[in-house]
Image 1 (cartoon, rainbow, N blue to C red):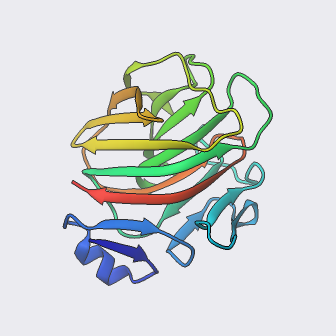
Image 2: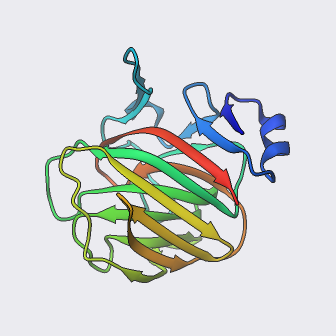
Length: 202
C-alpha cells in the first residue's frame, strides 16, 4: 500500500509504524536548509523532479552538509529509502550527493555521502552529533561514478545498522545510534536532482 506525503501529519504519523510505503512528492512537508536553492520541475508524463540548483546560503552549527531537504513527517527508524538521483555539477574528486536520515535537528542526524573518490571526509556514512560530522563507516568502496545519468540509490536501516546501494551495488555500510528521525536528500556543497523518493518502514 502506498501513500503520498501531502502534509497530512497526523495521518502519516499514525501510519509510520505500518508497512505502508510513502512516496514523497510536491506538497509534502518538505523542510529546506535554504528554500531559495530548491525547487520542483514538472514535465508532462514524467515524475516531478526536486532540483538543488546551487549551494545553500546556510551555515550549519557544525561542519556538515549545507544543502538539505528533509521530510518533516513522519519519522522513521527501521526503513528502506529509494530515490533516483543525478549530479549536475562538473566533475571533481569530492563530487557528491547525500541521503539524510535520523534527522532530529541541524546538530543531530546522519547521512550517507556518496562521492566520486573515498577519503577520510568523502564517500562515508557520517554522524553529526552535537559536533562536526565524523565517519561511522564500517566498509565502503573507493567511490561512485556520477557522470550525467540518473542513478538508483537505496539506503536500508535496521536498528543501528545501515547499508547503502548505488545502482544495485552495496557501496558502504556503517553503524549509527538507535533512534528515529526524518529522512531526506541533499549535498555537502554541490548540485543535483532527485525524483521518485519512496520510504518503506521495515
